[in-house]
Image (cartoon, rainbow, N blue to C red; front, side):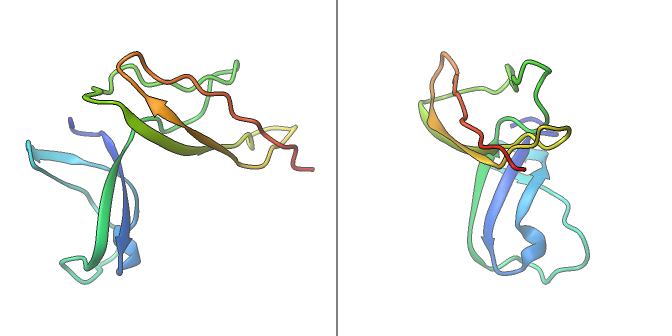
Length: 114
């Protein structure tokens, strides 16, 4: 993964290590990322890292995309989407599917948040 790619870290006992982080590439098997504060090091727990393929807001047409991610094999995709920047507002909807070498197209059903 190149510099500035994002990963989602979960499972660290020290909460500062958990979250979405931009990485700095070190080599084919490692990367680093910055955490806030001064948590104990090294992190402990059952830690997992997952590539974060899309991060940000959608276009006016409701489309979010990333055409530069290198897919090496079909992978399950999970995520969340929410419209909350302007009225009407919507509750968070779940995204689920499989990303392939042809990409991922998903429709998310959002419920109004009055």
